[in-house]
Length: 123
Image (tube, rainbow, N blue to C red; front, side, top):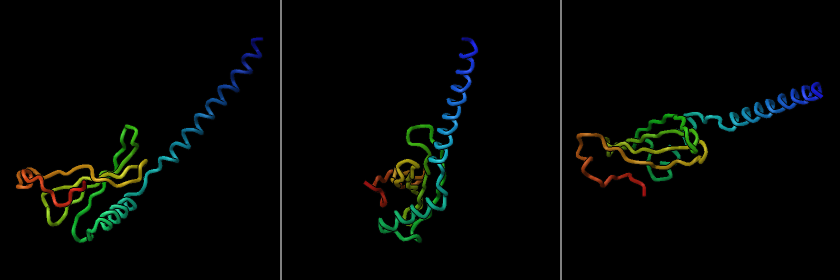
């Protein structure tokens, strides 16, 4: 009976490890990071659809791995030429695949800090 248990346990362990390895490989494949240039192009397209020309703003895109249900995401900062002391914060997520304005960051010691009437705020 002991020999039968030993023969049964080894295949079960190998099977379980195989399933875990396959699951991890598929998870890594699905969470493949989108290239920064691809995200920049999507942001330019998004802002163009909002009516902005590429000459009207500066763009900075950074990748961040988030330890939450949103997965990894890109942090996008846009500074418009007509409002150089304000940074508009956007995000692009690996799971939702949408660009969204997340906030507005006026630079310190500027008149824009007291002025809550930001020109490019999305509602």
